[in-house]
Length: 515
Image 1 (spheres, rainbow, N blue to C red):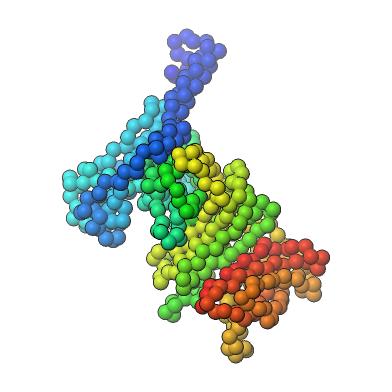
Image 2 (cartoon, rainbow, N blue to C red; image 1 turned 90 degrees about the vertical axis):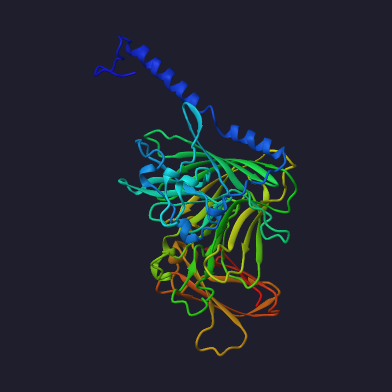
């Protein structure tokens, strides 16, 4: 249909009839576009869970044998980006199979006409210096995909979201660089029997309207002990958000089901000096776990790189949120021109609907360097669903930088561990905790807050003090303690209170690993 300058349809249709015809056409179009949706993926997930798990086919050896540098040399041609010939706000670029990413995923496009597969074509890729002949990779398949969007510049497309490997994905907000990742599901993480890594095996991507500012993606997850349906609604912005709707079906029993998992890296930081005389002050993608409980209490646990596996948890009922956060935002915190950790996002999970009772678990794995993620955080429900019973779990995941989620009162700015130069070594351990925020700015230097700190039975506090931090306007607490058994960890926690006992800060929760 075309409109004349007078607003009437060509062919003599009157304005009222024309409006009705256009409305009917729009409704039919929407009905066709919605002919495939989340319930269709959930149906497939339920069918998968009712049948035995099938191992994926073996990838071509020529591609799996590629090293990291060779794999990175396989690049998607910009002129072959999917939807590149349209005026749509989003583009898609695909990942080739190879190196650690040998398993293929099936990709589909959903529009008003239905569902059609996006077929693999070697012509999408430039194989660089790999020596691979494109004619021999016709059956190689996709390993994942990226979403491009003009995030930082209206005339330039940026990568804003990617899915690659198992159920891993990561996203970016404005002015950010990749750091931590998220996963669809974690099964038996840090369990002696070994972790199971579910994987997304198929995606359906809705073709957006030219004026759309969000993109909807459906995914089918499969694993020996679980299958699931996912819907991701991507909304790029200063803080990019992903609204996640999931429905899980368990095939078999498991010891631990990790929901909304976040994965990051912590090598060393303010509370742990770097090895080998590293010139960088800190090396990490996240420096702490932040929690907001239903009661309104905020908890901050600084991360560590332990000598042995360290698993801790926080029990909660219907938590308001949790995340692996990157609070240090100055370039001088890192002095890393290549990785720019000061621009890495924080990942914040906001539940949708009641989650019930469970725990937020933090896994910290010893890491000899910065090449592998060694930090995992996720929600573990107290009660698991029965086999093949639908289990719904929804949340919003925010990729944040400036203005990241934290309490409105005051928060932990940094945690430092060591000893002052005046004190000779006496076997004690000292920590300096800086608090900052508006509730502390109002206090005069003559009316210090109370430092309400405690340690567990494996340590004794031998010195505690609090002073004004004239450089920031906040307050610094010094805590010196002596451990009873060096082979056991020490749990510590503390808050700042005003003279009337009112809590002024989030709760600082720290664990001193054994040794």
